[in-house]
Length: 241
Image (cartoon, rainbow, N blue to C red):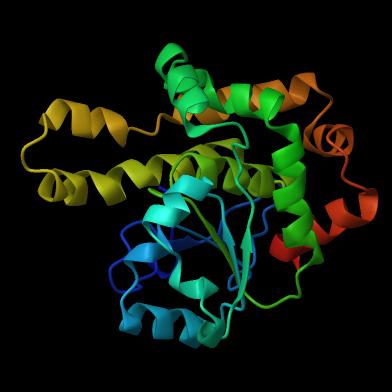
């Protein structure tokens, strides 16, 4: 429903990458292209994929993964000769084991609200990096590019006054982009488990937006986690020109 084809990007070996431009806003505008990109694990990039990042103009990459994930799968954008500014901020700063346990006990439809409540310091750090970056295209990613990446994308889209249904549809698009590829990648796993692992329910975004409204709105929430008004304005300007 939402999503001009130009928003879906093809970087060799990546499965779940798209531009945050082109989304409809509540005042009948569209978010700006070639500013913010969301993606899955850049460790998968081929040499052609890295060149595609350069060709698109990406100058900053924010890696949201845990340190142990990076140790297992180093990010090619971090190499000195990559020509890209690389920043690592582990979005879920507690241990991977803690968040895996939490995720098992928390329905996907409510997980984003839990992150908004418990990862405020890390969210502030990520958003400060984005606010301080220059206007060239900036890409942020985790492993599958759906949950950690999705919550940053949803916050930025909400701040840009994107319609709630469009924010939810952007999150849910990861299900379609990952399902077939993951079924092929893990042929011996239970297909039901694979499909559940990549399920991105739109209700999760709607619950998150309701949580933000209970905090006084997305701006009030961003102030509460420690972002200054100047940074908030810069974040909004990334998508609203």
